Image: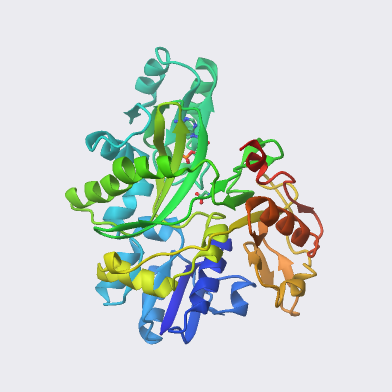
Length: 424
Ligand code: AMP
Ligand code: GLY
């Protein structure tokens, strides 16, 4: 089989590693990819939003399966474009990717189908939002409707902060057209858990749970980032929580999308909050999480191609999706200054230390192969260092040990990824 992966981050590197393990796969391309993905796949310089070029490439190269890793092309309709050319593509169509693409849509869906989530109101008009904010309880949560790189959520402690938030989202358009509409949501408390799942339109098979650390600094302080590290499984995701979510959240979401004529095929990422009133949905994503994929996929036993093809064909009920009975931790090595401003172009050394070491992975996020053949930093999040272990404690020790193997100027990481493990 010939596979094309669309994307260029640590998530796509993790996907490529799983795809490379499948005996069915002869050749992997990645558009645009990065230096690490380039060791497993042939990287082609086509951007993820260049739909015409991507479909032309897939046709020319007789690609058997396209895997779209990123949210922007999914929400923009890349799968629909591929299907028009009869190219098999793993991921939701545009009318289903809206589950991630519009918070107002997802909130309305949950309300209509009684899927537990925070109470909310939607606003198209800043003035009406400001009036509402005079009467609401604090803290309160403002969310830009559209895609905003995971940064369009503001938690406001009081009316003054909320006024500043409305200005940022709806008037100054800090997140562009994503802020034409806004959701104002009740503030929830509890532990957060990410549960990713494979969906074929009807059947849903959840993967092992994970937890992300979104803040830049130790102690979960500092600015929100794309994710500074993850661990899997979450010790807080008990069998009881799973049983509740299977019954009230997972299958109901898939059924709701089908009932709306928006059959969902691909990955649904459930961002959950385990509140004192039970699990509730914080958000949906229509793709693997990054860096969640970097701890979940290395633990998956089932051939990823079998699972993805079953999703495309609507035969997922015939496949058992199995995970190893162990744990994994991923520590993101970032460039100092991320997520605000940082320098790029520094040489990365020590990557060869991961070669041949079972259970250790160095997923590339922002890296580039320079013209003189060196691997250099090329982004805020540079590498995701993942290690497995018999349990979470061992996985964490192994991951932090492996972070010492690689060096680059301005290397920055959190030192407390997985701190919640100690609170169990
Ligand atoms: P989202 O992009 O919707 O997942 O939001 C990003 C982060 O904001 C989440 O991971 C939570 O930490 C926080 N958040 C979002 N919605 C709420 C809420 N209703 N109550 C409390 N925290 C929230
Ligand atoms: N790590 C969170 C996300 O991928 O959205």
